[in-house]
Image (tube, rainbow, N blue to C red; front, side):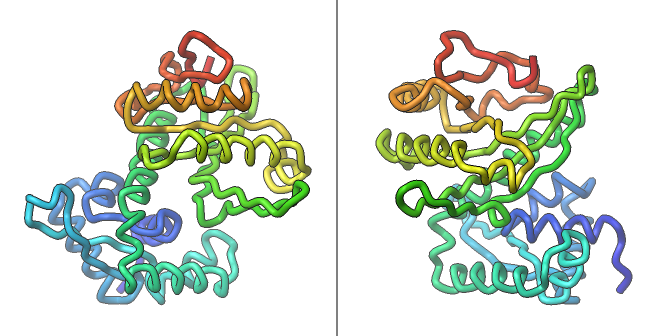
Length: 271
């Protein structure tokens, strides 16, 4: 077969987002379900993608949807496109396949879906707004940070977003945390403390070229957003921006939809 530019984008995206459903890939790259399923089947049969089936949500639908990850032949392409070693990509693939085989991935599948949907919303919003430009989106599997602050700490954001505003050329860096209301206030506060400790090390500058960053928390409801804000403010009044998925509509970047630690009113991500 002959790989198209769209094929390459699909293969890289399936590596970056770990697992992508047929419907997600259709929304990103295809005009119809039939054309999407046909091309994904060809990529799977030629080992550029791996395919898995999980119960659909909600369960009463009684259907299963195919999910795709990067396949063996796709690993070489990802290595070239992203500048990663093939060994590193193979480690990620083996880890994911172990989790799928043991069914442990089912505990995080909703989270994986939420992150991929969030990425779609942000990329669409940046494409619609001519005052800002998305520089890069780095996925979670390329972002895990380990650092020392008296004791060994681990920071694992769901993504890193870099963007700039065109009028003044100012660049921004934002870590992303997707919250599905499964963590307690104490767990959230521990995560907040890890980000604050991370900000005091040299790692942000060494790894991402900046010592200043935001943390965007996306959650399930307005009530949950307000509860997270209260939990954050018990630790800090800086850097955390909070909203819920229902507000990520169209070009939301300049809409006042974000709660900020230390602020009473909602703020837009882009002033």
